[in-house]
Length: 197
Image (cartoon, rainbow, N blue to C red; front, side, top):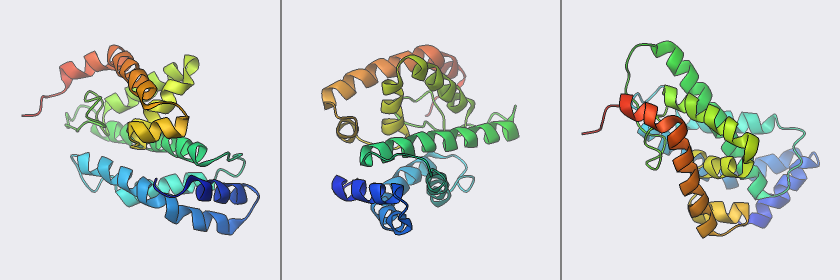
């Protein structure tokens, strides 16, 4: 996310106005970060090859291309929507994996070390999605924090910049969200998740 925010915002505005070349110029600026996040998820997968980093980023790209009616405001808006799409793709992946594996007892690794009870490709990923949908009903801002931090892989500083708040606020709100998520889904999954040795 090192590219100047003004350049990304300008390209988003051109894309919104119907300039097809703007998207071609935008993707090289945002692709490295999206690819890095996707690769981190894939490295954590127990069964590599099931979900490829490039395929994950391409799926985000295809969904972005389909967003013809988005009124792009700035790069923060772009990354927020990308994070939401990454969440949906990983949740869809977890649903399909869960359907294939019912009763198989496959072990998966955490989505993020700060929420170790949520496993990539596991039932807990589906539960996380449901919990975030519930949280969004009364506090969409906190869901945006989770999507940026855990699904798009933004640092606390990057999240603060995108959300136009302080790092201290991001840290404080993430502490609340982790606790809330643990109460909603963590305790159930920790008791059934094998401990790493």
